[in-house]
Image (cartoon, rainbow, N blue to C red; front, side, top):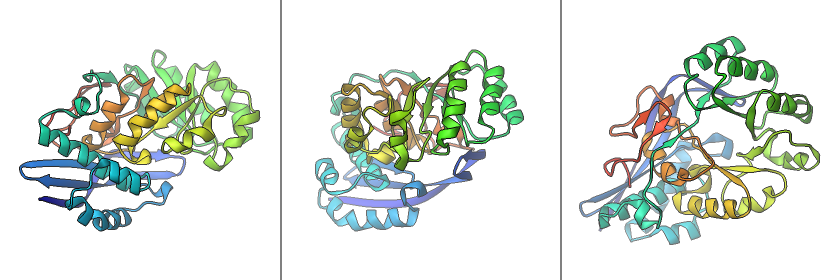
Length: 326
């Protein structure tokens, strides 16, 4: 007999995290636990207002699924009946973890994946003044890959400040839908000149068609325009890369399928994250194996992480323990 429980948790950040849409000093996550005998599977999601999600609505939707879950709902039924998003992600990841705890086999083995190896993650610098970014970039200059959040006005000065103070780091930037075509025409060539290797989501997702007629001085990655596998078709010919996040795809099951399809269609894959704890990063770590870019630095932005958490050594991330997940 299964028992399902869920809870809302608040986690403070190390400081203020800013993107083009606003800033936060703490995050709210929802954790699902599914107990079957002595085995307990856990999954975490980050309800995200950009996609119309709130913690209260996510909890209510999960509560409505408790009878089906306690009656034995598994991943295939879940993915066939629930839309992609945070709700499905938390449950899907909990069911993967439960299967691992039940069988004594790690999730990577259950999913037919090779044994996971340590990988390097991007480290994110949020929107700030060029002066503050210069200080932050100097502090993080030893990291192999920095990801800089942009906001429109003043972006070239922001990028120049980071590049000058972290000259050896690879650099990608993320506009989070904040740019206009005029911004793009003015800034994209300059980003390429400064050695930026990828630009993420310059335009609002409803304006993807703008990319059809624009030259691309550097590769463009879809984030807010990219959700589950069904969204890939509309991105072909516009974007060079896609950012796959478990909270958008609706769990590891769909994200694994999506990654395979994306790579088969010629997209580079970034595996990203919402700012969240190691419980959310652990399944993303498996997904990020072999990806062109891993951006799973969420716990590094928190004041404290859950224990046990993922092991980070600088930007190097190590496979999760079974106690954490999977």
